[in-house]
Every structure is written in C-alpha cells, then in structure tokens.
Image 1 (cartoon, each protein chain N blue to C red):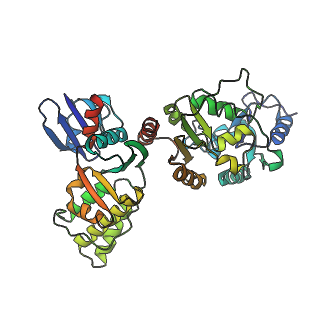
Image 2: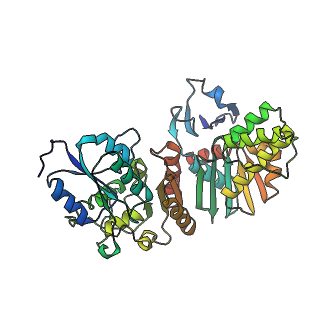
Image 3: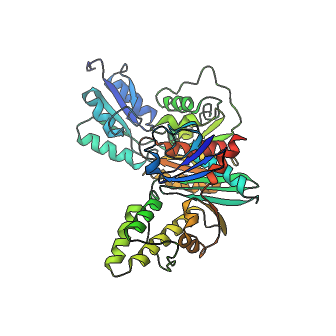
Length: 237
Length: 216
C-alpha cells in the first residue's frame, strides 16, 4: 500500500454505499481519516469542490455519492473533481442495500446539533450508540439535510425530532423518498434546504401540507433567517 | 422608558412615560450614536437596546393586542421585507418572513415615488401591473414602461399593483387581512389591495404594541 504524508485523508460526500467506502479505505489506507466534504470546513465558498480544493494533494481519493441518494450537485461535483485530477470513486446507493436501522438519534432528547452530528457520523461508523440516548415525544421537528451553518440548529429545543434526508441516513436508506417525506402530524416542523437545492420542491410541498415553515439559505445563515426560525419555534408551541 | 421599532427605512420610538411617539427616518436614527432604548425590535435595533425582541414575535403580540377576532391574518409590509402571521383561535397557525426575493420592494417604491414626485395620497390605483420579482427587477419594469410611453404615475402604480399581488400571494390569498406598517398611510396601496380582499389598516405602531405587551 502506498505510504501517504501524515495529513492525508479520504474525502466523501453524501451517503456512499458502505461497501464502496470500505473498499476505498482498503485501497488507499485503513488508517486514513474519512472526512465529509459537504460540510462547512472553512473554505472560502464551502461547497464540495471548494473543500476538496482546500485539501488539495492531501486528498488521497474522493468517494462520491452520485445516485438518487444525493442531489444532482453530487454528480456534478464528482465530474468536476475528476476533471481536476482527483481520484474519484462513484457510489450509487441501491434499494437492495437499504437498511432498517433504529431511529435512535432522530427521536432522542439531545441538542439538535449533536443529534445531526452523530447521525452523519454513522455514514462512516454505523456501530450502535453506547449508551443509547433517551428518546422523547416530539415538541418540534427539523426536516431536511444538515445545514452548512449549524447556528440554526441551536434555536430548537432538545425535544426536536429529525425528519427528512437526515432521518433516512440514520435508517440507512438515503434515497427512500417515502421515508424522507414522513413527518409526525401536528408537530410544528421547519423544512430546511440549502438554497437552489432541488429538495426545495419537497420542502415547500410538505410545509404547506403540514403547516410548517419552509426555510432555505444560501451558504451562511443571516440574522433574519435565525429570527424567523426563532419566532416559529416559540410561537408554534 | 423608551421602546422602539427600528425598521430598515423608518424607526418608531415610543416614550412610555409621556406617550409621545416619534417616527424618524432610520438614516437619521443611525446618526444618533448615543440613543438607547429599554426594549426594541427591528433590523436596526441591535446595539441600541437593553433587550432585543424578535420582530415576528412582536408582530404577533401586537396583533393580539389590537385585534379582537379569534382568527385573523396580519402582515407587516416594510421597506426591506414582509412579515406575516396567521392566527387561529388566537394561536399562531402560520407565520413567514419574506426575506430575500421580495427584499427592498417597499423601499424601492419610496425611491421611485421620490424620483418621479409621486403623491401616493392622490395616486389612482392601476388596473395593470408589472411583475415585481424584487425591488431592482421591478424598477427595471417601471423604466421599461416609461420608455414605452406610459406615464410615470401609471408606471409606479403598476409597480405598486405588482407589489400588492406579491403580498396577497404571500399571505395565501385571504378574504381579509390586517395591515401593519407605513403602507397603512398609502391610500393607493390600500385601495389596490382592496381589489382583491378586505383590508384593515392597523397603523405603524403594531410592533410597538407587541413590545408593550411583552413588558406586562
């Protein structure tokens, strides 16, 4: 196996098939850290491609979710990264590999930020949590993908349940649209998407159907968006 | 004790001891470096108050203070954005805040009015409208209309009509809504909105009423 410099990592985005991630690690180095390129890592524009460029030669490979389990941006990012010379391994998560993992964090009484962090960590390490956090009845809901700017999550109480794509990730079913659209009736829910994401169509439809609040933002969240969510969380109790 | 609603274009300041209300252009307020309020809301209030209140919460509480009905829709049309709450059984059923694509439409209307010397108290509503995607795109439509020979008055009234349609769509096309903000004092805006539904103007101090309620 090739010897890499100490700061080398394997990048990934979305929810690649577990088999593809495992094979990438076996090929490039079992000891290389896996890093999610689709989160804010401080790059100037903080998108997948910007994050990859920031890692530069420290990126041994990119495992790219490019199927229905990820928005079109994933496919386009993989295309661009390959053209830029990064080794890209594509993954399309098939229905036959759907799992039925228990929704521990989606229904746990914990800070929302922590729950989403822990769910996204299950992409790399699906081991069952130990100890299992206590579950709770939902008072609020957060539907969608992990936001780039996590400040919005701090406005929600610990009794917020997680729905949408993030819940699909915890269940191990990243392209299960039926599960993605399932929310608890009567729970005030914020339907969050990044701006210009195709999931906005779903978010607006579901927000209208469930009298929730559709929120989108482009890159970092501004004070007005925070105020809107704060008011919804408080006034819809 | 002073409370304030410091909007993007106008600020409303209420002295609770004397009852005096001051409405000042925010461009003037920002020059008053030392002025401070006990409680305030609005885009320009941060850093000028001991306690900052969320605008949508102030709007909802102001509506509850001023409207006796159990079910009602209330919209605050500002210079920079549009805020909306719908209450059912005096509980918030839906709220929203049009932040970006509708941004600065109200302020743009004032700029256009000043540029073309429009008196909104006498401006007749227009049957026609232009698409007001946002302030800048709407202004381009006005300039286009004028270049085609439409009068500045009619063109600005068409902008206002397009803006009103945006507001009513944003509210979900209700049969009746309560209006908050400076557009309560714009008869052309109110009469244009009345083409679509019943409108009850509540004036410019709804958010201040909400702040007062929060002090109780």
